[in-house]
Length: 368
Image (tube, rainbow, N blue to C red; front, top):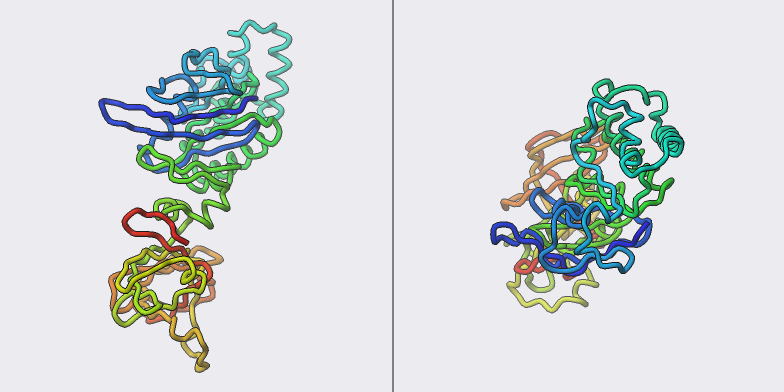
């Protein structure tokens, strides 16, 4: 295993800088995930670590050893691609052991390692089959096994589950998690799927337009997003972002509708009347208020009226999209499946003020 450190890595294609100032360090044996929308540069970073592409700026280290000028074959990394790249004329056993054979290992050692890895991946009953006789999930496990059997310093995976159907993707994701706990190889995993990132990674690197937006544990980046891009990329459904203005110690959504500013916000921001902000709140932190309630309480001034626009049953919950009355803004919220409302209903909502995020609209910087 090896620690992987990237220091101010940059890469340009056709005079367009596709990644810039990429710096992070993956500790020994950890599982890190690079995630972001298509074209954000995550696969380019992986290929640079592997030595398949060169970094035009910056440095790459494995355990404090500079790797920039070391060719891919000498970096002791194993890479699994989106297409499994299995040899169709070889059996599962031959595919698993091919790298060891090319390295010159003895036949007895190869057979022992193939058997061990096949048992780990539950492929031992398939060793005589060729890839065409395997399911997609089985082929993926063979590709993973071929990489693991080499016992590399670094394990690189480039969207390895994207060709699988939803059920198989969930199963294989669980197997990957178990596998990493067994072998403990330093792993860097690329995906555009935020569910994979959240469930697999010890830490997540969120990228957009070739730059790092935030690095943190799944809990950190979900509950404390650095900017609106991170806030809306992670989470299904994503965080709601509401443009508001500040007047007289309240956030105003429109001329008639406002909510109080939490005490901790007043302590941290120095707002002027008319100043604009972007307010963020996750769907699970918006509460449905009982329309039949006659009781007046101190939160009544923070009620938001909204019209139900879209209803999406999800089993144990219902995702509804609403339009705030007298505005053009929509909100997503998750409510219990027992709700019996219908489209066009006017409902009352209340934001959990303790769960609000506040972003500066020009820079995207999170203030609170």
